[in-house]
Length: 246
Image 1 (tube, one colour):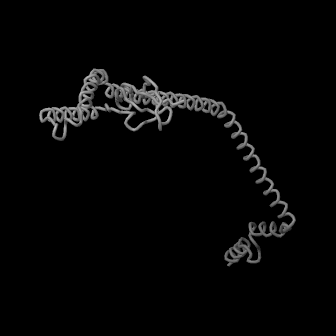
Image 2: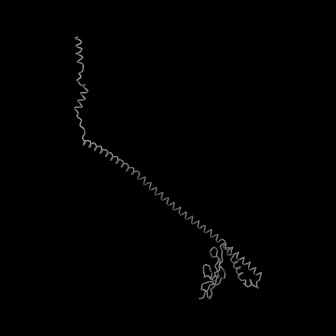
């Protein structure tokens, strides 16, 4: 009995009381109670926000300054390169302009040479028969004189000679064929006295002057020898008589 009583007393002494708090909880409660929480005021919040904005603005200014400095450095580095490229471009442009001018001059010279060569070739073709045509002039003149010296009364009527008529007709046909052949090669005959043309020293040669009633001074009234042109150029001037009344 005594032992049982002692055991109970010891057990009750060692058993923690239900009214006592653990040391850890007591300490935490005491800390929370002793430290009072004070919420931050609006002015403090604005101050912190303003500080953050100022910090961000300063960072942006620093970044912009760094970018400007880097851009200035790049521009300073690229400026000599740009100048060199500009000089090279101007040099190449000048060379291209000079080459274009030389090409234009050479093209113009070549075209002028072509035109001159064409003119010379054409002139050689036009006047290739000039010497031969001059040698024919005497024959044409004699043929023309022979036809002109036949009396027209002997070619028609009762006194007409059949043989003479046939000969005259044959010579006339020969002359026409000869003149057509010469004309195809650019040679033509002209007679200033046939229409009484005005005297032209460029295509005529005055051999004498004589008064003629009813005709104007300076006009042609007689053709001693007919003139010839070859491709528009005077091959031989016509020899004529010119009227001079005064």
